[in-house]
Image (cartoon, rainbow, N blue to C red; front, side, top):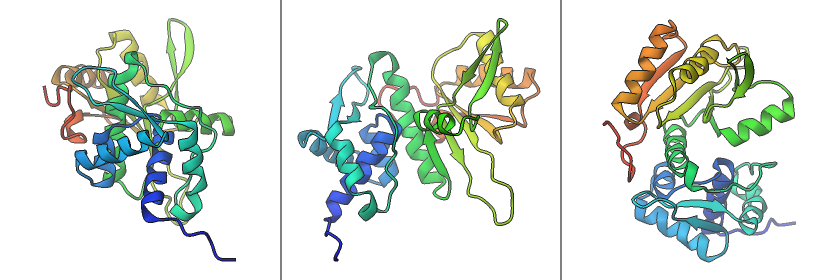
Length: 251
């Protein structure tokens, strides 16, 4: 029996929908980075999917990029073409919501995800929502850390996790935790999280992408105070995201 022919543009759109499902919400800038498109072309593709009822567009913050989330029909479309498109549909994820409270962080994370996928094509890059799903399925830590503060212990999930490719005959590689830092946490909270990363045996290292110089300096000071330079790396957000409306890259 001959497999059903699927036009290239339909597969391309389905791959975009699958990626949106995995990340939760994306922007035109993120899609542009990931697929090496102009921002205008990426926006046209996203808006076309909105017109078809496969995506929803959310204009939440003035001066910032719109966010796009996948709809029920969009998830069905992505799942339908996964075999023909040669990609994996991210099963078991709840439909994402785009909120004003988290919009800025969501926008930045989408671009960081895209930048990491482009920079490390041999690695597996997943967002926090997929990490939650996989840790729940395996009933063990895969990238999250245990944070102790005020006598209580809670789990902290990084924004993104990178898995390096396995080496022949070697042990399974540990992941790298990635944090996108846009706001100034309290000294106590930041110390507790960094200490958890430094002590974790479930990750190889943690990388912080800091939006501003002030945030970068606060992070570096915390890392140095904990003697955690071998486990935690701090770099500016501009190292992975060249430009993004509304963000103080390099400030």
